[in-house]
Length: 398
Image (cartoon, rainbow, N blue to C red; front, side):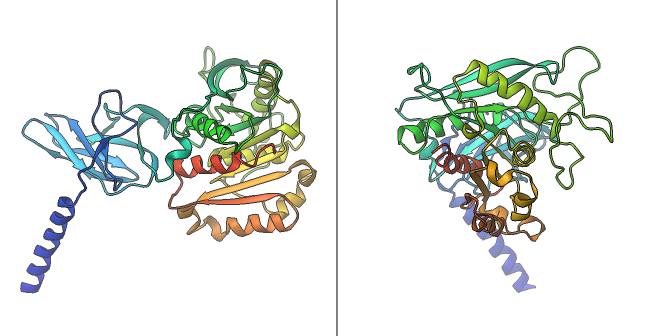
């Protein structure tokens, strides 16, 4: 009993000591609304949150799958800290008496199929997406009509700094897709795409090219009346039928799952971009990439449309095997670059026991220009994908 009591007291002492040792160099997060001090982040990547809720009985800070209890003071202000977080961007929410709500202190981002709070944890390598005094391109917000969807749609288009300077120059295009539960805002905002490209181009590490970020979400039903909401797509064809196209089926996905966006991309988005912007409108100067669900779409679409694209980027969303390359008509002749990436924590226990590094190495050994990148100390998260874009962009259109 004495031993048990000693261990219990020791345990409490360790917890108290750990709390006391939190480094007090907290700074407001860069993702806070203007003038808001909380949440804060310190040099150990610990978050300190603060919420005013005088009538609440319980307040929690929910991030990376863990809910942290906040403590209430005499003024009804709740404060608390998290464990150290991974570098980069994370979605989070506040729980007040069992109800989830966005943090009123945070800017809002679209993820997990909703607008909610997000926080950027400073990274040791964040210089590649830092705002610098270099020539900056434009991030254009574009609305266009889609015949495939019979609706107006919305996308973001990045053009390099030289686009409005040299009016005779034409540019290659990368079509860059978000992940599941996200939309066209993902790469434009959480992904830091424009800053990554501005810095790469200014440093002479990447060619200049246009990037199109559209909404690839699939299987969204159209409302019974009126025009489909922005970015939504035509319902899937009845079972046993397929709309135009023949995107390969991914295991676990319904047949034709990628066809809706593929038809929109090929029949609406690409023609719109080629008509409105000074592109080099051929397959040799057209690439597609995506993260997670967007990588799965990229794989399905590029394997179905080798006449449209010549370069592929899969970020945290599968691989292309030698067998798939050999069994897809025209694949080897069509593609001069295949890029595959994951976070290091994703590949520690790869899905299905498949080693993506080996699959990509085998593809390279078979004669294809295949590249494999692992983001250190990250999982299925935005820092993995920011780093992946940074690496992939340096290989494009050389």
